[in-house]
Picture 1 (cartoon, rainbow, N blue to C red):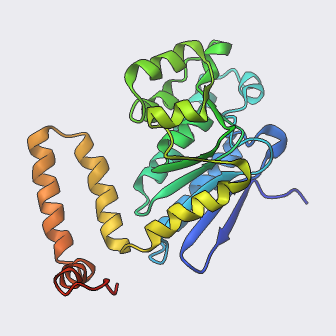
Picture 2 (cartoon, helix red, strand yellow; picture 1 turned 180 degrees about the horizontal axis):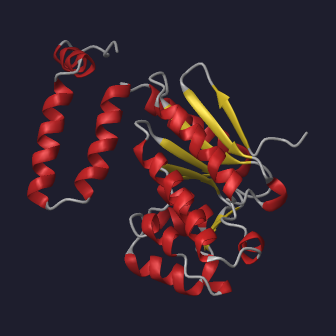
Length: 257
């Protein structure tokens, strides 16, 4: 039997680890892989015990994006439209999850693979990881990857990556804001766990409200953003977790969530 394209590992602490498992094709985002991702993300979104998701890749690379060989074999507009719409649904499913999604990146993350990193809420990469929106090398401007890319890095760097297809290093990605942390290859999982530990020590409801607010207000004008943020904070303060946090502060003790 063929191995599944996507591995799901649930941890007792509420963390779900999703591992892309098509190493022979550098974890390419073909239709079957995208469908597997979409189904798992949608199922996880309905799980109230979920605290965080880690997205990783098996083999030598995190993800090389769409498979150009498959795309060349289907020179049909409807086929391309379906593929890119499916990929967009996956990215939106990550966006809509109420918990942080962390990309654990090693090797290369190119084109839609770089899009996947940019779409995740957080990203930790090995020091030898490299990133590119390299479709232009083959005559294809990475339009869909540009959507989260330009929401992560400065416009001129995004344009540079998109029109040249060049790779940037983990250090450049860190400086630009595409990733949060760098770790030695042998310490990558430990670095991700350190980030997870910080997340898991906080109330789920506060992070869920915060993630939704953060992305919603970014698309608004300043006045509307402040109105939504103020209302969100007021509602958040009504949560038992925030009430306990305020009481713990007043009593000078650690909160008991």
